[in-house]
Image 1 (cartoon, rainbow, N blue to C red):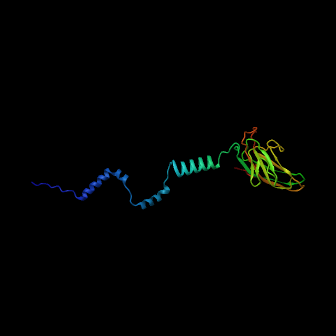
Image 2: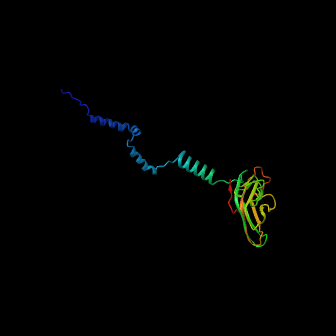
Image 3: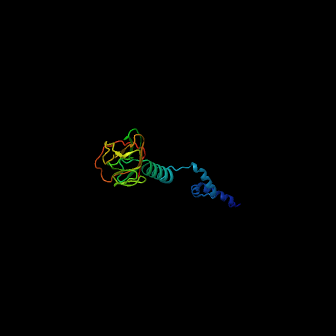
Length: 256
């Protein structure tokens, strides 16, 4: 009777069986733990695919189309720079922004805030006493009418005003009009309140002032120009005036 001998499996068979077990039972494990040793090739592949990759949603990002917080973003709740933002340091459109292309304007100039600008009166005289006019327009109306002051070229600076034509200054509740030159003019510049049809009172309009100069000669150019500054009052308005459209300004004013 012959005894049947079982031969041990060959090394190749053992390796094949182990490999099959790993393929069938360890696919997930192998996939999660596998690494690629060619880092240079990986980096090259990532750079190639990068332009086609995108992040759909992000709470925080250096640069993003939409983000809760971002250094730069098209739309963001908070952003250093943004096209549209609820709060932003710089923004094209913003609810609150240090600098914005479009922002909500105040109803009246805030107490203690200042507007500054330039003015010009120019015309041709035909007789002695011919008049020429100009206008000062405030970018934002004041809560109450300011006290007006005219400072002739080289003249003393009155109480309520500071500085000179180069650096005009006005205390709260005052409009200070500094002249740099006066050509063919008699008397002082007349500062009027067109809103109340008044020229010879101590107050200007909440919206600005009309300017009138009279010629000293019967012909020739009448010219007068300079700078102005107005500061919003810090005390409550003495009376409420009905809203009115401001006069158009020859020189835009700035807030400071």
